[in-house]
Length: 343
Image (cartoon, rainbow, N blue to C red; front, top):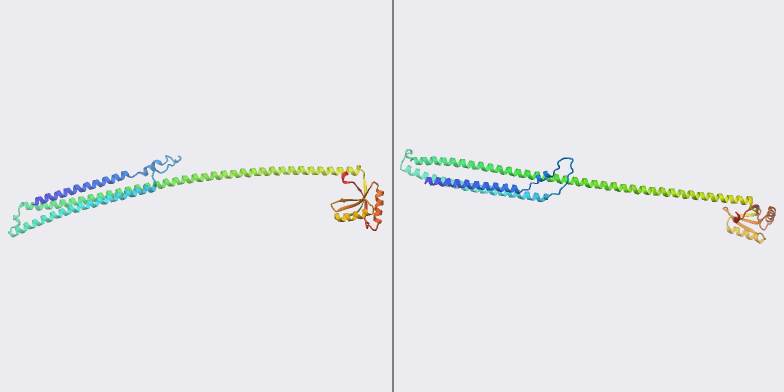
C-alpha cells in the first residue's frame, strides 16, 4: 500500500511539474510574439537622422499617428500583463492542487502508519521487532519529503526567476515605449522648428518685398513731384518773363507816344470816388456845354474837360471853369493826356 502511495505521489509531482513547465513556456512564447508585433519606431527615427550637421534635413511625414501608436502600445502592455497574470494564476492553482495531493497522500500514509503502530503496540511489540520494510518506508518518506521540499524550493526559485524575467521584460518594453515617445517628441519639435523657420523666412521676404515696393513707390512719387515742381517753375519763369516783356513793351510804347505822338491837353476838374459821383459832375459840365471825358484810375474816376491841341486853349478853359461859381470846381488843372487807344 505504501509503495502505491509513493508511486501515486511521484506521478502527481511529475505531472504537475510538466504542466507548470508547459504553461511557463507558452507564456514566454506569447510575450515574445507580442514584442515582435510592436513597431520599432525608435529605429525608424534613428534612420531618419541626418548623416552630418551641415546636411539639409528632408522632412518626411510620420507613417503612424502618435496617439494611435500610444493607444496600440498601451493595449499591448495590458494584454501582456493580463497574459502574465493568467499564467501566474494557473501556475498557483496547479501548485495548490499538487500541494493538496501531496498533503492528502502524506496524511493517508501517516494514518496508515499510526494504525500499524497501534496494532503493534497492542501486541506489545518492541521497536526492535519493526520489520525492515517499515524502517525503509520511513526513510523513503523522509527522503520524499526532502525531495518535495527541494522541488518546492526549486519551483519557487523558478517562479521568482520567471517573475524577474517578466519584470525585466516589462521594464525593457516600457523603456522602449518611452524612447519611442521621446524620439517622436524630438522629431515633432524639429519639424515644428523647421516649419516656423520657413514661415519666419517667408514673412521676412514678404516684408522686404513690401518695403522695396513702398520705396520704389515713394521714389517715383518724389521724382514726379520734383518734375512737376520743375515744370511749374519753368512755367512761372516763362510767365514772369512774358509779363516783364509785355510791361517793357507797354512802357516803350507809352514813352514813344509821349515823345513822338500828338499830345492833347486836358483840364482835370475833379477825381470822383465812384462812378455815381463822376456821373453827377459830368452832367453839370455837359449842361454848361463842355465836352467831358471820364477815365478810371486806381484811386478813383478822373473827370476831364477837353481835349485841346494847344495848352493855352486848355488853360483858358480851366480859368473859365474855376471862375464859374455854379460849378464849384476851384482846383482844376491842365494835363497832357494820351487816349487809351493810342497808348
